[in-house]
Length: 434
Image (cartoon, rainbow, N blue to C red; front, side, top):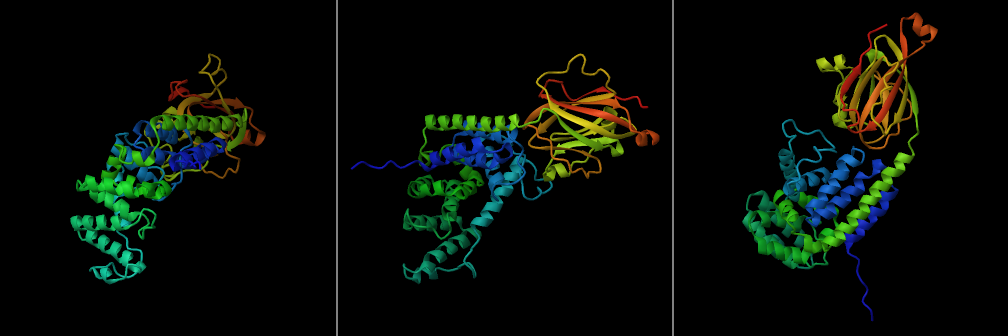
């Protein structure tokens, strides 16, 4: 009788992510790519993790929402352990960073503290056991193992880590590989953390051989251990590679398929971009704003035209948003937004009253709005990526009411060029006034 071949769960996860990514909008790619990151991180495949993270923070729209409560900390933990540097800048996040804790090293420390608190949280009600009364309970009583686990948690909380290690060893030996754990995987995470930090490498190998399969069905458990610095370092060095069970060739083949899927998603989004997108925007305070349609917390805190030189050069710049200074006495602009594949041509400044060029990282739909907001236009559809943007103001005949008030009107041509095409930022021309 032929033996039925079992599909590797990590390979199945990569295949499912690939299929979903090819059909997803670019602004929906971060979540499945994070799942891909977890698989390659578990395999200790540092080089390919670097490629995946490059897609997550640069090639696709910038993420605005966390995948799980631990997702950003897990990514930071692995990148720090693997020497990949600060790729996320702590984003996305669900709460503001504590002042003075913005650096990668500090964020990883804070993530580890948060995870340890979760691992030591006794979730079964009542006080954490302080004695070994659990041993008097029958082995068939589910409270026996619950209280055994709680006793271990209490020992760690009290600083008795060596004693806790001995008890965890017994606990994991008694726990059958096919048996559900009362701590929902926290026991294995805590054991690995203590074992790695105390040099119990033989025990660690034994635990992984007996219980390493639990990671395959529990992505949150993997995220948990990636937040623990000693465990993350061991995983980056291949501690789970045998449990993942994917060869180098299999990982490379899967990554190439994933890259094609990402390209397909971005290409489909690019084809949906209108040739010219038009908006009318009022120009209170002599400025208009080009920014993400949905701002994350960091972007919300960025205020335009706070630097002395901003008004002088006609723009106030941030990586993903820009305040564009308008010619004086401007009532409104009729904006035309388009894409270009070339650089600045010799005739591109003919008839222009004012022009600036600036770099812009686009992570999703954009909004062109006045300084006071209030516009309800549909967001501008722009393929995610990094651009050099040319903003040019062409004089228009003002309507009678605007002219009577001494106000002017302009056509604002906003053209997104390939990154580096305009040597941005630069001020090309400033209006001399009416």
